[in-house]
Length: 390
Image (cartoon, rainbow, N blue to C red):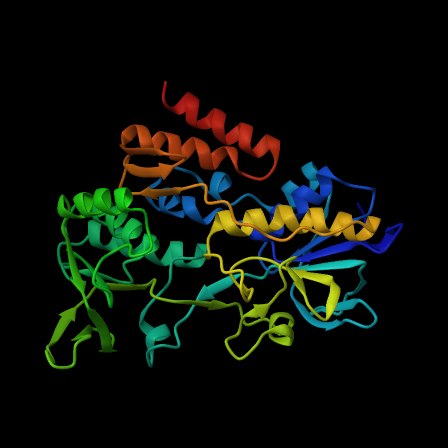
């Protein structure tokens, strides 16, 4: 499909994460022939829940991060690699950094979130997150350094004991073969404070069987190139501790991506307010989905499954809007939770089923691979997994 020869004003989706790509796929399934354009700054879609398995080599890059151009060819949308810097709601026009102007019929914003390094001075100079392929490369390099040098003995520090921090701690401990300690730090009184109790219990067991030390009710007060200084949350305890570290991974906070397009609509908290139909109130032709939004009186968690459900609903509402039908409000359906707990191990809670261990790990793999965008991508990934087990 040629961007210069569109027969009508397209539906434009800015941001190709779970929310954006789900919107595109659902729109194509209900297509009335209107062109659909997806714009993203990255050339690849990243299936973030499987980034741990990319780190361990259990999955390959093409399985975890397929190219948008390949998905566009298979599914039938237009992919534009670029960044949107300006939007005119009156003219229904947007402009990219390279100067391309696009007139849209409906617009979906799904630019996502990124690691928030603003909570501590100089944090970005010494830490990385775990949310993109560049983070993956940094941590992969650190693993290789530890495994190939007897002099690298200082611990790896992970800030944040939510799902990302816990999953990464277990995977890293396995990948360095317990050569160095993994320090998991969190301000809270327990790990995985928002997770299912079964998954939390299995995670605690997984951590206990590895060279992982947990510092609850602690936070990083300061850091430099060589060490971090921990302080306790309770002021009356007033304890501090210095830890020399080999690497620091920050999973303790996210913020909406600082794009001019998002900033145009965001509030003081850098989030975009939407109504129950996921529209930006003043602009019925502009929808917004994913971790960067909030809806008063309709709270929902930030996760991949939420973003995907919002994407599917947004596509339905766009079709309804174009046909003059009533829109549907967003209702989140909790499908459960799956955690990776080291190489070949996982925990699953969902639909009344609780399961942990190698079988849960295989089910988690297959469940995610079946959700990969594009039929051929899912089939190719699934076939690769099945043949590799023979």
